[in-house]
Length: 451
Image (cartoon, rainbow, N blue to C red; front, side, top):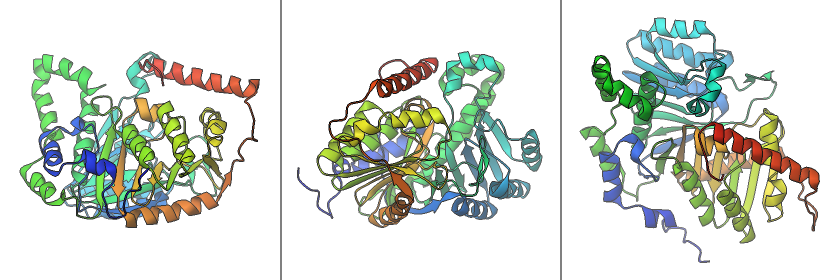
């Protein structure tokens, strides 16, 4: 297979990107209508490791905000270092900055009620995405689809995205405090790629205010004349289309010759159900030298498993970094039942030892990487609202790869099975059990078909 030259654009750029076409896509369609990554140049992206990097940068930017802060978060906790970010939000709201925060009803259910009261008193606008309403919620398929985003946009110009919740690195909701910080990554971005992030947070906030789901409740609200004016106001607030000055900015930056080409990719239950998955699969299929995957929850579609096996078979170095210290035993079992299948084809598997692992990273060759909230499991790939940032830049990928190599060095490689090994009845039983659990979970969430 022919090698791609170091200066030539990757195949997906050559085949899938036309400057004028993609500008029209960005400028003319609603935030949820993009079914493939749309890359823009002229971005600046900085790698942040853990809350130790993210929280000070986030608080500093919020303290400098002049007109707006929009956040979408799965977990919010006021304990420890993350409390500084919450204090910065309340300071911003008190000085007149419009602060909007949407949190997931399940992920943030353990946050104290006093926190929400304090934030409301400071002027923070709060929305709860799918509040959990007792045990009866288990029979509501929509309750299984969570808002798993970790996204913040300040003044429409600075964005933060990744896998880091607003919770201290040393604290876990189920396991309490630990000596070593959780391994996680986030990105700080500037440039035209921030615009779709802003539109997404606004739209998710609007969906949370309207009700259970955009599509279901839009009809209900529109049929109620007393709510029609409120609905129209919320739609205007969501700003689903680009303003003229935003179109001009993107038109200037979309030139593919400019550095730091980036694309914001979303997984939702409307038109972007497989955008993140397909972008990741395409990168894996096109890999020529190496693939590094870091994720705590690994049970991907069969297509991704086959692509990883094929990459290793053609000589690509494929490394997976998974949890060594398990936060959920069933999640660890789900990944482990796939070990031998992948290792037999040359995939190397490592387990992170110092602490919990929560990072979601895919790094391919020397100039493609994605960091975000999406794991490689059924919840992220089929159910949850997820957001990632893809970056095509050699300097950034080199920085990320250097950090990942340090993470792999702190991990234990799982020895591959001996030649000729065949799974015994206990291994087959575990794999069957995991498959049954995944299928049952998806069916409860209203998803049918083969995973």
